[in-house]
Image 1: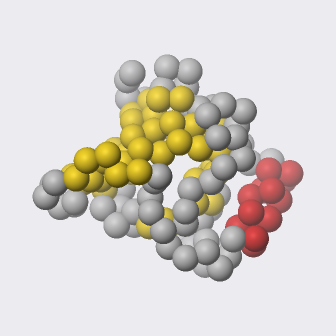
Image 2: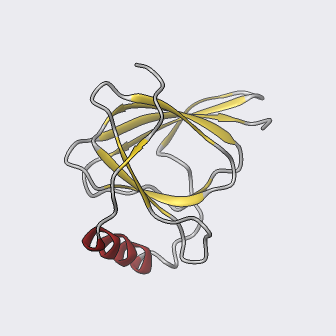
Length: 129
């Protein structure tokens, strides 16, 4: 697996409508965990695992630290920010060989698997960043 710049899918009007509908339906969700399971934690890092089957989504979560994502599988995953966020929707395309991506602190969103394959990643949260 190598690091490549994320590739994004164009958000068509139909896809935007689908993402807006998801955001409206989940508008009252509380902030939750950034992923499914904590695999390891010490004073410096917290390592999470996230698996999303097609159509599944993460909790609404906030990236309070810098992260590295080690993406093993999937094809398309959407980032859906809350309505009052300055961020727009984005849809990342997962390369067949996976990818490693850095995510700066500050963002709040849901991850929604809009693809046809299981999305699987490890998130490395840098606690002192």
